[in-house]
Image (cartoon, rainbow, N blue to C red; front, side, top):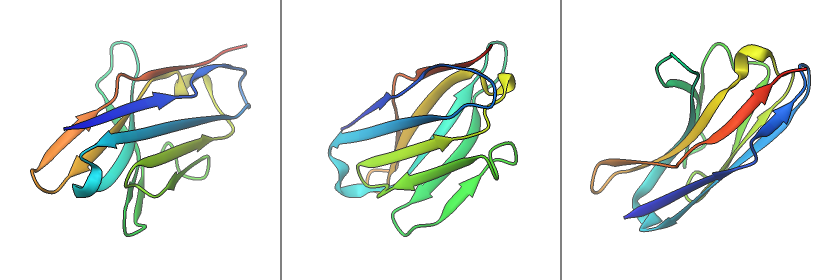
Length: 116
């Protein structure tokens, strides 16, 4: 089993920055990818960015140029969010993906609100 815990959400003004953190614990040896997703009210959960232990990244178009994912993708991953917009308001979820067994573990989410 893997436990995933996010932190760092909060209220920020448009144009501001926020850094989210995610920590995985437990049976982390098989983790090969960690990532960030978000879900706004009334919307489906969507990809923000992912990072593999090999260093490969994948960003949603909405995140390119503004958000940066970093960490070792084995037990920690971060999301630096700059130039935040009201439409970035959502609950941000972190996940960890294991190879053996093939499973996805989710955190409980952290609220990000962008508002003046």
